[in-house]
Structure formats: structure tokens, C-alpha cells
Length: 146
Image (tube, rainbow, N blue to C red; front, side, top):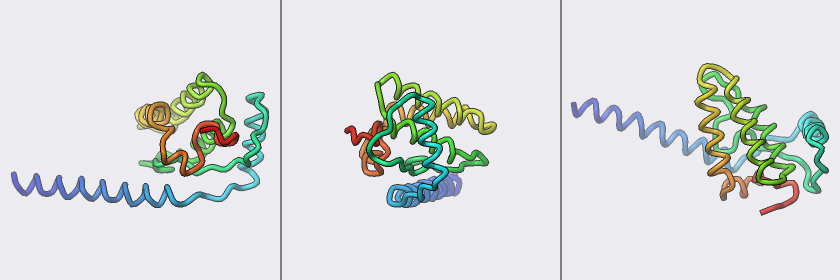
């Protein structure tokens, strides 16, 4: 019994430390914005009928969450979510952007619905925090809204 407990403790500890190492790297790095990303952001703003913010679009992939997890590629979905955050808007628009994140993640594979729920809960209820403000990807960051 003690050996099993020790193995579980070591495994969980390793997972926890690995997550925090990856989280720290994610917080302090930002992928480059390609011309395609900029064109997608401009098209996204036009599709939403929103004016362009004065701060240029940038993204960080999936903030504090892996861009790829267990065969699920979430990177492009997270960039689209960052586009919604960049544009900002009303509380109802924020809820809609977060709901779209959940719905898109749900289509990525067998764990998609569970990952979508976790990501939706995280951005809807925990997303406007020091990490997103530090990364510059909080709601309405294109307008420098607090």
C-alpha cells in the first residue's frame, strides 16, 4: 500500500511540476503574429461588424492552457478566441465569444466536449485575471480596457 501511495504521489507531483514549468514558459513567451493572423483578425472584426481597435492584434494561443493536448489541436481556436477578446464589447458579447470557444473545442475529438467545458468555465469565470492582463489578452485588450 505504501509503495502504491508513493508512486501516485510522485506521479501527481511530476504532472504538477511539469504543468507549472509549461505554464511559466507560456506566460513569458508569445508566438509571433503572422500576416495571415492579422488578415484573419481584420476579417473577424468585419464579420462581427465591429470597429477596429487602436491596439494592433496579437495573440498567445491558449493562455495558461496547452495549445495541443492529447491529440486535440486547440491553437487556431484559441487564436480566434483572442480575436474576440481583442475586439471587446458588451458582457453579452464576451459570453458569446466564450461560448463559441466551448463549441469549437467540443468538435476537436473524443475529449473535446470535456475540454470545451473546462476551457469555457476557465475563460468565463477565471479568465479576466493577472495572467490575461499581463499577457495583454484580456477582454477588450485592443481598446486597452481594464
